[in-house]
Image (cartoon, rainbow, N blue to C red):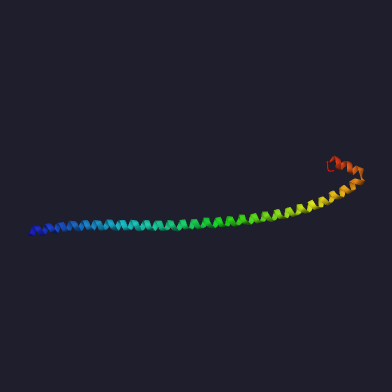
Length: 117
């Protein structure tokens, strides 16, 4: 009976050691997973910050180019207006030149040479 008890005690001792090793392995695995979760959370925060930075940069670039486009449109409108004024003035000058060329043969000859008339 004693041998049986000793044998059971040894078996229990071995099982206890096995359970202790399993417990240590689980704790080690939990620690590794906790560290990995911490790393992944840190990585997520950094990637979120990078994404926010790039989104802000894209918005700023879009706003900058939208402003530049508006500036170019305004410049183009001003130039078109100036060209229209000059065209109107030139049309008036052409009318005057045509009228004067009827009475001035030298002027008429020069305008003809320029293929203006």
